Structures are given as C-alpha cells and as structure tokens.
Image (cartoon, rainbow, N blue to C red; front, side):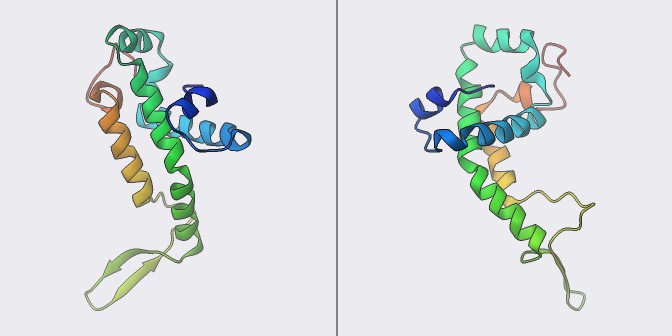
Length: 135
C-alpha cells in the first residue's frame, strides 16, 4: 500500500472509506505498471526518501485514485461500443468500441498517466533509465 486512507484524506481525497480499498488496489496496479514496478525496490524508495521525494508517490496515488471513476466510465463506454475508436475517410469507415483482444487506452487513462509522470521523477517512469538497477 502506497497511501493510507488517513493520508489520502489529509491530501484532500473524497473517496469514502468503505470504497477506498478497491480504489487503492486499482490505483496501485496502474502506478506499478507506469513505474515498471520500480516502487517495490527498497533501494528506489530509500533514494526517493533521501532526495525528499517520498511524498511524490503519495501525490501520484491520490491523483490516480481521484481519476478512477472517470477511467472506469471511459472503459465502460468503449466496451459497450458507444465510443468511436477509429475513423477513416477514404470514404467513411468507423470503428466502435474495442474488441476483447484489443488494448485501448482511454483519454482518461492517458491524462492520468500524464499527471503521474508530471508528479514522479522521470527516472521512475522512463524505460530508458535504469533507476538503481530496478527494472
């Protein structure tokens, strides 16, 4: 767990305590994916603390948790086929929704990921960087 419910509320979070565990788990999975699981390295977390950046992980988690409802809603829209996911005008061709084997990143997910990348050091989110050999 990267962010306790108490700390989440201190940061201004509004998710109810009864629902928090589900939000936190989903947010942690996203954050782990976007940081290439680097936050599980003790050396990485020690370096963040030494640089005074340990709070950045909490802020990133809050940002993800606060956007989960929008991400879920966007995923439902794509899955239900109510969103145009592709378009061609070499005379009209449309695509609605995603197929089960297709990975579609929603605008909500992209915006959330972008916000996380603004908050966290680039070393944590870039595949081009070996952050303390945590890969």
